[in-house]
Length: 96
Length: 492
Image (cartoon, rainbow over all chains, first blue to last red; front, side):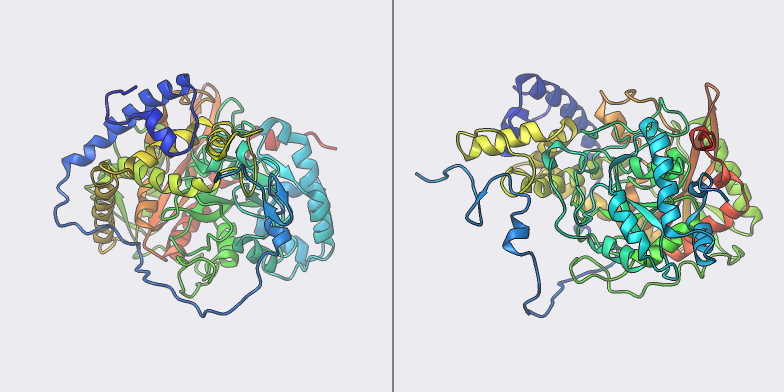
């Protein structure tokens, strides 16, 4: 299903790992076509030679000393897991 | 002063009562609790409250610390240890924060008590708080209208005297716009001024945490507590934090304020325009010089924002996959089914729309046309601001082109909702600071609805916009007005 833009909502939703109902895909297609039509206005501008924006204040590479520090215990890291066993997150089988 | 009157106080007023030992931190928590129980069923500003912990903390509060014994509400997208952090999303159902965000650590170090989490648009995506998957917050000035968003719970709580002050987060106006619509003060600091560690990321190059308060002085007090470098946030700026409170009260003589001509456009409600024009006269009479300036790239701001913010969101929200925390779909048949259904069932429509748009603008074949071009236009917008800030100390505009709109009025049309952010978005794209303060009321069907005045400042120049905002505020009575629901709480 394609609308007035190149965007195919059903296809991109699969890339983004979001299942959509057909109704939802249809509504989003129309709404996002409108948004993409609106952002077309960026094409009016000449951006030749413009460097990509940096931050308002220049921040370059930030380094810290590579020293051990306190962090979550395994128990804390697992404290919100929907499923866990033996100190591990449990997920459906990924490889056969 | 009875317990019933306490919630109406500003942080500064409460602080002096606490320090004179006229009230105890426990009295404060108990008065706030009563207030919230009396009116939050109508306002619906809070998603969760933890008064048991707050009571215990109040017993040990040191009132001589900068925010000693002051309860502060926290937008429910910032981690507070042991409390939920839902981001107003079903996908974080059941999550409890295993750590404190840096801002929360800093609030605690200053003596404040984080007691409750406020409602927001899901993952801070929205301008009305209607995108919350959990509840619909009302504007305290008119319960049939939105509080603005995305920090709508924080702004409504402060406006209705259900909080002395609150933290919000601002990605495209999410502190300033709800502050304007609810008639309170909201400050978005310079990008990097306040640590983002522990703030659930929406758009990492745009997000900033900041205060929502009843007065400009209170905003300065919270800023003094939460600003500063954090080694846990690599975008945090290692610059000294000025004495924000100390700069308040300085004269406006010699201060130059710019009015961007592209911001005084058609589409601004005539009552909003009149209030801004009156505020300009007032600032002028206080000694400030008002000059017209131009920001030629203004009309591209919203388009640039909705490409960059959605692109960053699509990457940041990939972490919600049902594996490590929060909601997981039942009985997944394989891992793709686990991801696809968890995200289908866990995310609301606006979040899905933005992830899809963001994935698209980053995808092969479209990256250059959308994302890269948007980043270049962002640089043009940055140059506009750099150039006007050579001529003026700060910029002035309405915060929002309209006062609070009706619940449901704009939900069906995302693009119209996006256009409401036209005056606030540039500050995030460019990384500068901005504040919204009350500057009047519209009169609509017999309801008074607050109007917000926005001041934008140079990078790291929070002290200047606070100074100008304070001078204006102290010469007017707008900040003293209370919404009917807060003024008419039954005496107990």
